[in-house]
Length: 204
Length: 272
Image (tube, rainbow over the protein chains, first blue to last red):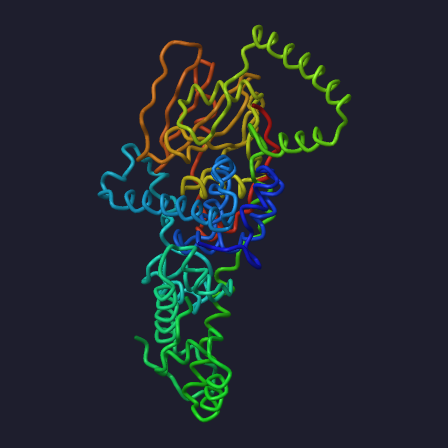
């Protein structure tokens, strides 16, 4: 269980204020980056991740009376974010699993047929930069949990124990996810190494 | 419990990157870095990858999300502020406040006998289209989002139902007010609030695969249906023919344009 500590809002902070929305917003903002990384690791789409975090916050606001004093707001809210994101990802997966002919509109017009083809939320459309696209593609191959571990460790500087608590996995697993994903990225993007260096590894 | 880094090359590398090496192991690793050019390159590469990750996954502004929190609530800030205020007043004043409360609550109860208030609205609970219409009538057509231009409008539909929509210029008798979403055909059903000849009209939009082919029976409302590519649109109106459905079309735009779409203005929500 997460203990209160630096950067970790606790239930006491929020519950003492009786579910005050201003207090909620304060706690939410303090841990927002974590919620964002959790969401984007699962849905892999910026705009969608933003919607997911917002939706999770609204769900959390409605369930504020279920918040247990003495527990971590960050952990509680993270559960909501993961729940909403996974729910969305499952729905999207089911939708994409439908046979193509079932997805076609029955009365599509010619004008409709010419219009934009869209990729459902599965694809990351984050940055068009070549390396970034390669990083995104490489990260597509690892699990949601591995992506979340990498982002939380690298970008949020979260300790492995905290990541493990947040995701409900053993600490060693969190560490292993990060190390393996880092290694995989280094192998796949070895040509990104600074110019003039000697080690150009073959792309895996 | 902390994990002890393994002493393989990769194990030490990751422990160094994570700052988990002891002071002596750290010094030893740095000496190794000076000698081993491959290790140095690998470390530089890791640093570059981290920078790319930082750019790729830069979080949006938290304030922007907080600003989109709904204001309507049945509990929370209002009640808390009230309780805190009440705790600070004297006994005499408490009595006076209590008397005022009796009058207000009693008066409210009497009023309730005359005017039945609408039930508490929960946009995440499954609603029929007619229920949504009734809610909007009760709250005076209060949209969640107001779009300033086609870009915001198309981007909002893109984010909610994964297909953009825009509206052709509306005739004079039609006033588009804004957009909201509700759990109707699916949790992402997005709807346009409009007035046609001053009469409230809603157009519900969702993906064809979640279409439940809703029907309305009796009453003063009519339901009209139109499909635009992968989206199904329902116009719920007190008028005898649809006026808004035909204005919707799918724009010929790129995904990048949609992803760059600014968020619409969030309106301060009111209502029960």
